[in-house]
Image 1 (tube, rainbow, N blue to C red):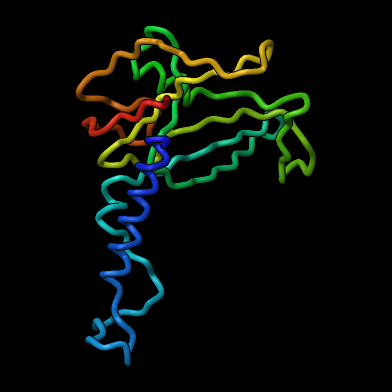
Image 2: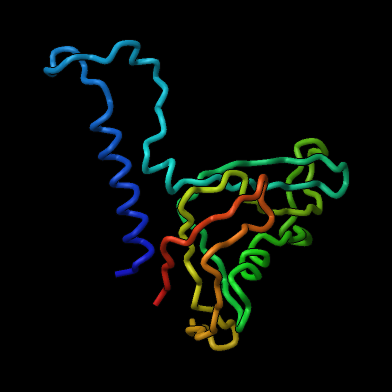
Length: 179
């Protein structure tokens, strides 16, 4: 089985179990109801506080300079690797911006048309425990197949995430290697 998929399943399932145990019971189900409960808000579980971070995607229209941002939660970062590049370099390469042009133009709501744009990715909220999946397979268009990369990826025991909002040291807990 794919170790990364299993780990994500395990973290999600653990979060669901913790939520179901901490939710107040409805009247008639036995037990007592929590005072002040039922506002419709879902509090973050300790599992989410440990493993969940937020990625921010920023897309800047090169015509009108308007910026569109989108935040989304993540539990793990999947990063491509290159030979003898430390993990910090791989993370930096992963978050490097890209230009959307030609057939891949961005639809700008301000311009009301497709425009060239710059798109970047930042870690907006860092998790307390960072899970990194090293993408060890690369697709070769010429041969139309995947090949395994056996590149050495050095990593420190302490890591300062690059290209983040508010930097802090993250201690490595778990590395997932894709087979």
